[in-house]
Image (cartoon, rainbow, N blue to C red):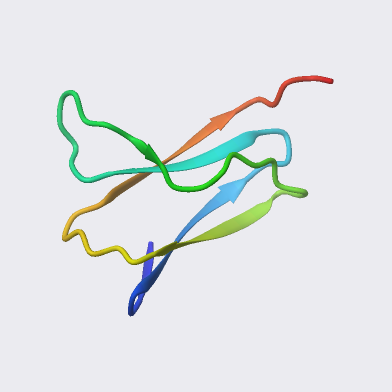
Length: 73
């Protein structure tokens, strides 16, 4: 996670064989709700992804990446 003024970035390594979705929550507790931050995507290659997150005013924000195998055509 990198902070740049009002714009922040979350960076993680990806594989082109997975479907990714970035999610966030305000707290880590029982019954918390994860909110989708980015649209699900399949990267074109194995690399690192930098996803900007704008207007983060929360003093605490937790992120997770959900990775699943994409469906076969």
